[in-house]
Image (cartoon, rainbow, N blue to C red):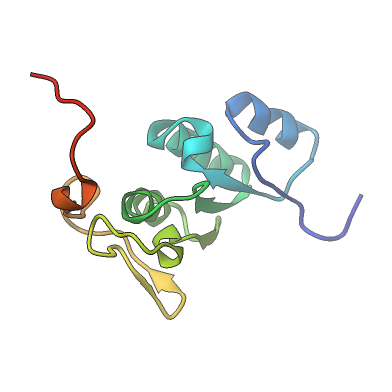
Length: 135
């Protein structure tokens, strides 16, 4: 037992692992990593579950650039403020940018892009030659 908040990180991989930790009173918060749980849809499910039982969240991913940051920003933007602890803008720590270094954080804050899809424009030329094409 500890008086300090306990945050579970990469051990939360699905609904079952979340519920087990919650039933055991094994966490106060989780680091919800989109790719670790299998994508945005599964991350949203876990986010909603955490919100419903009062578990706080950090929303991030294991790493990534502009596209990952856009996905993280959108999930965070739809999270109830009282359960959101932090959000990681991973593209702040990368040199290569496929979407013009968007979205950006400034002064410790960031926002989800407003455009369609993830809200960013991908520089297709920056991707280089495709490995293969499907006709």
